[in-house]
Image (cartoon, rainbow, N blue to C red; front, side, top):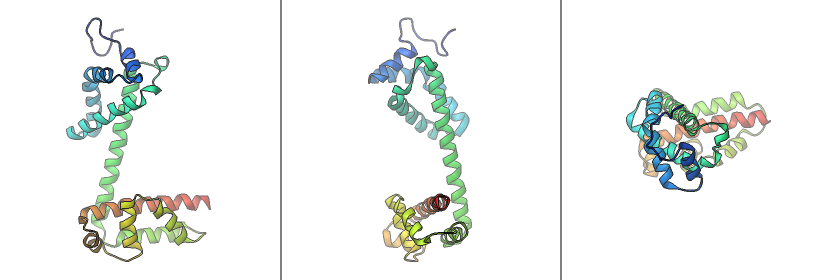
Length: 198
């Protein structure tokens, strides 16, 4: 059976290149990139349909190949199959994140400025039936990235609107909206997890 990509006589096999990458040989990664980047980018484009995003994701995939090469075993399959599986999974994850962000953005634009805060308050009242809600809320908020934690605390505990937060922190309004939406989603999910533990 011939390789999916013809290579010059005497050129290292895919397995040889993977072994080289496992040993820290950057040239082996470069050769693997030259050999399969076209195939892998085509696979990514079939999933996310965006040239720029596909290029970025392709670079991320090859960085992951470099970092995870030690997990590859020729006994379990061919390098190309392993790389295709990795590429497809990364592309699908990227698509899901993109779709989730788009839905969050649509929800935010469709709601009054303070609606996301009400959404979390209502959700906690409905979903958490035991324990100290504020203590649980504080626990989840403290686990957020600092940037999201800042806007959540200003909105939730100091009652600032998104525009007031933007003015107070000198952060663009769009960034405030994004951080607030992502933070609230994490709080909602975190409270549900804590509820399940009660």
